[in-house]
Length: 109
Length: 115
Image (cartoon, rainbow over all chains, first blue to last red):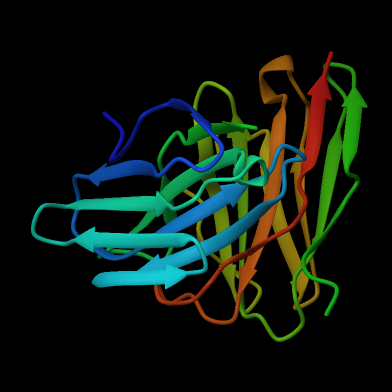
């Protein structure tokens, strides 16, 4: 069983909708990362969280350490948000990242 | 800074051939990571280096895979001999420190196809 589980696997939304992507993990972590992979394949880091909530533009990421759960929210979604969103964690024992399988988001006009 | 640079961007080779993937990390970054991405398994860590020294290679699939970092600005991932199941996108990433609170910066990836 993968240490990091994401849901949903695929998501289609209409422009303007509020979107939530969920990530659950089973190990103790020192940090959780949300990454975005564009259709061209490039990967960029969106957020790094160890507690609480972070906001950047229309993106909001939250984490609940006790429940081992994080959510990524996109407000007023736009077609350019279409990408794969990947959750990754640093376990307490190391620097390397363990990744979820990703959530493929398509926002239609 | 130009970001993490990987070459080649695409590689097509025949089974049994040697493949070498290259990575130049961001200047000043002490940690370098090699990842592999496939449809079935997603992103997986292969190996990472700290100050040019391999720290954790437990993700390297088998002896056909080897990685080196001869200096702070260059790393290679070699597959010899290559097999069709090695077809994947290979990403290199670097970070200033290995701390979990530090952002990893990813290269554009090398798409490898082994026929």
